[in-house]
Length: 270
Image 1 (cartoon, one colour):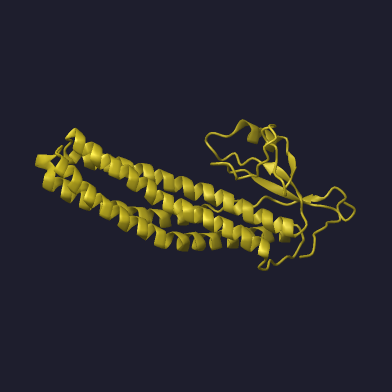
Image 2 (cartoon, helix red, strand yellow):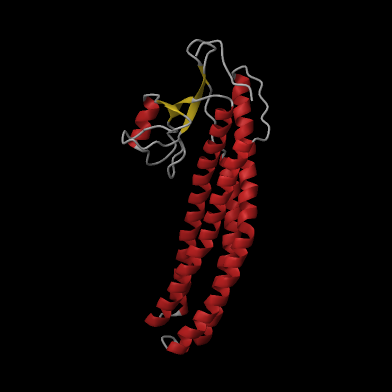
């Protein structure tokens, strides 16, 4: 791809590429659809079998029976998540690529540059990384939830708790998993948009950007706020030493970071 240059001696900073709230919501809906199916199945079968043995709770035989039920449910839902995880990750990554490319082309057009992106090995490699990471994260949702529920059931049996108590604990665990899905959707939306956009920028020969704080989070990182206020410049091929400790990071890379950047188009004499 032709390397971009502008007529300004000092270069020109593009408007930042923002993440799409709609794509975050779409990913969250896809994750929650799967999680709800799993939770409905777990709740139904565990309630049915716990109720059947409730009068004999705390006996070893009951513990063994419920463990067998849980083992079957765990095998079923791990397989289900494993089967759909990569499909969901690919579908969402394609959405992120389309958004990142369209948004960056729009910012370039506003700055007077007509650019059309084509498939490239660098972007394909970035997408593979995004897909692999999200596939692992989706599978981990089931693994973590199922392990916690299995432990919860055995603790209930050993403590002699009634079905109402177990049902309340299952509901609480569902809420925790729901919040984890929301975090994954938000965090990966930030990361993927940032990674794909940066890959495209590097392909165009752009190497420098200005750190922009989003001002969107409830608990902003002080050094990220400072970097945005001071318009910290950094090499997009390496990252920015925002905290001053030698660790190089990119906007949107750290958990819940919504920061972005303004990439700089250098002048012809740069």
